[in-house]
Amino acid sequence: MMKKLRYTGAILLLLGCQAIGRAQSLQQVIAMAQDSAITAFQSRYEYDSRKAQYAEFEALRKPQLYLDISPNYSRVISDPSRNYVYLRNYDRLSAGAQLKLSQKMLNWGGEAYVGSQAMWSEYFHADKNDYPRDFVATPVLLGYRQSLLGYNPYRWEKLVEDQRLKAASQQHSYELCLIAEEATRRFFRLACAQGILDMCERNKQTADTLYAIAKEKASIAMVTLAELRSLELQRLNASNALFTARNEEKVARQALMSYLKNDTLSLRMVVPDNPKPLTITTSEALQMAKANSPAYQHQKVMLMEASHQQEKATKEKGVNVGLDVSLGLQQVGSNFAESYRNQQFYMLGAVTVSVPLMDHGAAKKRYEAATAWTAREASALDEVERALCEDVITTMQNLQSHQLLLENTAQAVTMADEVFELNAENYANGICDINTYSLAQSRRDNAYNQHLTALEKYWTTYYHLLTLTQHE
Image 1 (cartoon, one colour):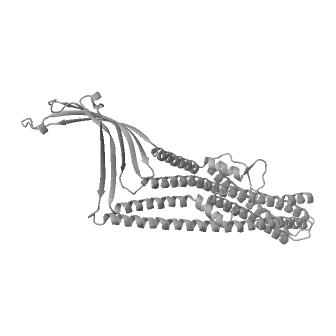
Image 2 (cartoon, helix red, strand yellow):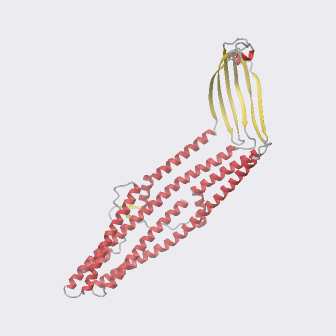
Image 3 (cartoon, helix red, strand yellow):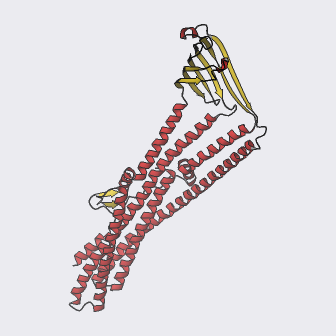
């Protein structure tokens, strides 16, 4: 019987989260969660959509070649009794084709184009001398247009789209890190439940062993009835605690299986070793958090868009000048071949000047609204940065305190195991009473629970810091 008790004391040195048979590590659980979680698929789809939109944006900034064909039919009916030229009845069928190569001038804010076009017109039910068939050919056409001089929307579009793509990338990484955080919480809930279950099984085994020893001693009047009843109560309490621990382990396992979409998860959870101490300082963590925070990046997008509208409103508040210049060769003929002979050079230019003489302050109020909104977005960016800095600093402080607590509770578990083993053996040999033994067991259970809690807090805080900084 003493050998059995010594074997029981030896197994008390094992932590409940150690692997038994095949085991599941934290990294494996995180990888499974990131491969199967619905939010991971949603995040991937959103990021792919943003990348496709950015590719479309980049494609539209390259030279564009278009072929436009526009057939047209018109019918004019006037009073038959009036024979004025401009009131005569006729049907007109026309068709035009234009081949145009355009390029956005990214440094100026306008659009340059080069192309060729031709148009044919045919009149019916009319005097051929009054409305002859004609062809208009423009083999070469060059032009440039810009709606608002001094304003370059393409520069703002590039800044905003680049920032949106960066924010989408950070959002995807952030979602994966959030999945890792949730998987870590569920993992340690199960790991702690398994550890407590192991502890309760050991307590039950020890209670059964001591109760068996006490019954043998009671037969020779070496144990009082009160002491025997105390051991019997302790045995019953150990059974109840074991039943509760098994139920908690099942609940925790089901929660993890549901998150991983795995209905056959029957492995032990292996608590990872302590990682190497983080080599980043608080200031470095703050810089990394700002660079990797999707909320911060999205708010920068909002500020850029507000600044864009503010600059546009500034330009529109005063004199608005637009430009559209084109030049080329053109000829009109009665047939297609004739329209391409004897081409004549032409140049057209249009400058649009718009001055808000009396708009009842609309342009001014539009500028004031854009300015106020830009200030609002700048203030919102400062608030996002403040909250992010607070989260990083708090997480760094919590991680340091949890690491120290984890080391102290590990020492407490080792010491509590040794004390309990000695007291269990002393009680079996009649050196100490039942109260001393029960107190040692209670202290060991408390130390073990504190260590499991410290493990969970440390690793969840560690992965939250990785979520903020994405630092490996």
